[in-house]
Length: 120
Image 1 (cartoon, rainbow, N blue to C red):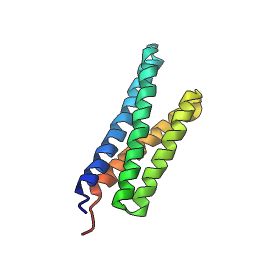
Image 2: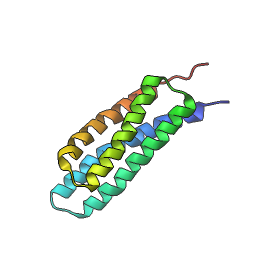
Image 3: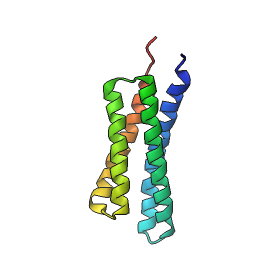
């Protein structure tokens, strides 16, 4: 079975995850300046972050990526779930630092995804 298309799913969802996390910072920044309409966009984009994490983990399982790489994806997925819960609970003391950590996770997922090479 050729897995090449799945590699591109892995890479595309890593980039989507990273861009969506970056977008979260922009949307949150707009919200705290007083434009409350951005809060709903921030919540919707959080769902995009979560969906990207789920698809990335599924692709990593199909590809049977190295354990270390898969663990980063699972950690990102779990952290995203926690982040969504913290956001809905308005616990900004944890929500903001976890958002910064998710940015690091997005960079790591993207780097690992583009460095990944299928074994022959």
